[in-house]
Image (cartoon, rainbow, N blue to C red):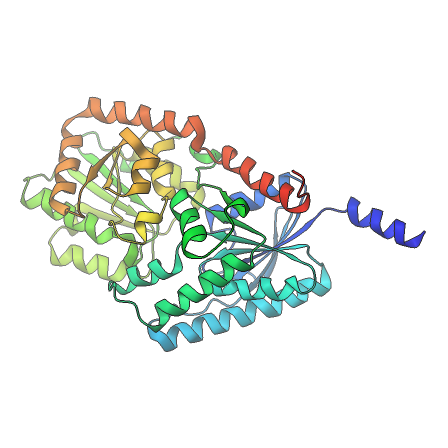
Length: 409
């Protein structure tokens, strides 16, 4: 009698998910926030463990989600730096997970990566019958090479490949943001394709309604070029600064302002580059801004830029900033990558071979053709509405969890 009662109670209570996030705080990571909101809306109970970021508390509730945080480590450089950063982070994540295991319990460990080695924590809990969902945001080996700006494999690269395979083969379900990443999970890492799902990045509701443009950026006498996003080495914002220099020197254009919204480890070098190229008067660096303010900035842009260069890492990425541009009916200039083309289609112009001169020429073309800008903006929004909004991706995420707990689905 007691056994039946306990079973019924177990079936009636919400399934509990523990999310592990190492490389950003919560709710700062937009994708993780959207996933959390979708799972909470579907009736799951959720706890997140992550670093503090700049000024977050060690514990708080974000809506219905419990969030436990540990002090943010310094960003590592070199082999010993990576050992320290990830060793510290994994220890902190594991200790908090033990606390959550005892205090609240969980049924699933949902690991957001990079780094893929976080999967070791989830694999540990499989001994206790917990399920493991591996959520791949970025390819760690390719990201490492992009940050090094050196394609030659070394011991760190080989270790990253090992942990990537370990994560893919140990997971009960796998998530990728696009088909390129899903193919890596299957073909390089040996995951079973039937366990893999694609949950694309997608703009949330803030970008889908009418947005009032930030007025101090609206200047009808000048064209506003804009970038919104992280500023790391791999993000290629230096290509944007070089393109501004090309516009000034080669095209003799100064009838524009380039706005760079965001912050990151490459910001200091970026500001120096602007001074070295003598284009600082044409560029506005805003620094980091609250996420809720991002749509107003994009709404003020005439032309949006995705300067991430084509390489093994970026070729596999679906950039959320491009989709946010598209949602607000903005034309984009970017470098030609497989995922950029699959995402934006005719809503973007593409420069080949990371050619800054071609990139600047395409920007110049859009500056001179307002009707083309408007047409591309309408194409962009139609592509978003026809399948790229987050609500479509949320259905895929919830379906994955339903199949995880009910294999007959």
